[in-house]
Image (tube, rainbow, N blue to C red; front, side, top):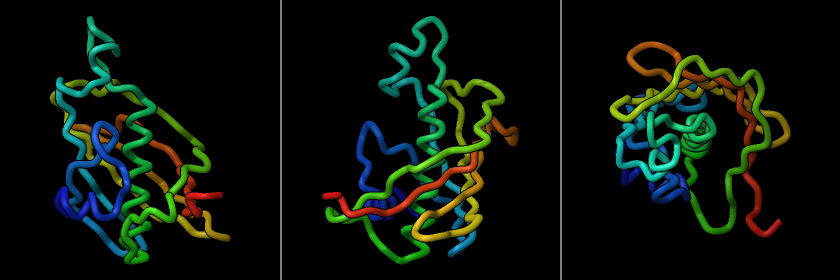
Length: 146
């Protein structure tokens, strides 16, 4: 998936769209996406000026966006104005090392199961073949007005 496909499937936009490309998609199973981390990211101005480090919550958000792409593509849905894909939980969150400008995050989301509209995923983020963060992420699609 290129950026245009991603924009059709996720409602996020700059500066909060955190996936640049999808390099692998297996319907109902897994997705691998890329986030190119550059010094021009707005959060680096304050996190931290003396040593720019990508905030851990944004690494988790990038993984959550990968789960959204996997779910929407599996269901063959596009983002629309009537529903949103909400994060409902994270378990087993771990950070192994900082992510800095120039790194390329490889974001992997694997579907574990779905139960009563809750999607559960095993996710990780890697840089240069090493895991920098991992989590089990739970999400659901809900009507935007509820």
